[in-house]
Image (tube, rainbow, N blue to C red; front, side, top):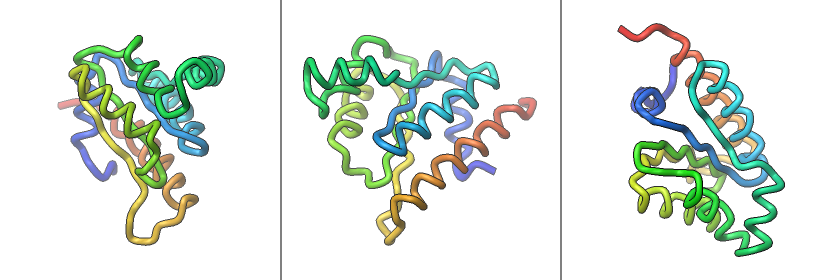
Length: 139
């Protein structure tokens, strides 16, 4: 079961779902988007060519927030993945999403000594649990 049923409700209520991350969390974002698409949920993550273009034209710290300012809108959901919860790129994306009226859900690593590998494994576990919950009929 997903640790927070609020996320299931947020995904179901969203116009579109955007999932962002850096490094391993970026790969997890793409994986979870694919899982959600298989449930009929409009889920998107930035592709590597667009990501590198925004990073080149603006800065790495602004790449995701610039992308969201083009594609996102009020009523969308941003799921932000971060092992550390400290990435400026992710934090700026969250700020941009909030400023646009998007709902934001953070899946960050623990501050209780959890290492990056454990944080990234938790992201995928939660993504798989989210998919399972979304495949269940609503009552």
